[in-house]
Length: 115
Image (tube, rainbow, N blue to C red; front, side, top):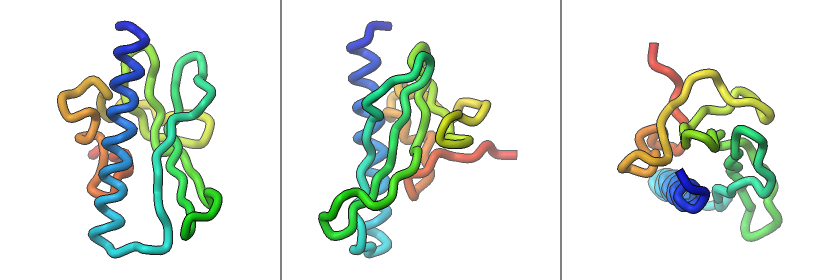
């Protein structure tokens, strides 16, 4: 897998995640914040973090949290266990035909494992 393929798939996943979150905000008529999903500027040795940020009425980002971790070697999507580490089990892949949408809930969060 080349870096350009990974970067393109990661951007597709970022855009899909942002679209799902924006659709949820529109369905619920949330008007107080504008969410966005950003790829972390610094990559770790194994994972890339995606952050969700909210800006209130066009101000500076007020709140941010980890949206997902993506493994660089495989493109697997992981739910965050904390801001520094992903949960143990993968939830999907950024290389899937749906750009990883199946790993997200209707609200845009990464799925918990089903028990």
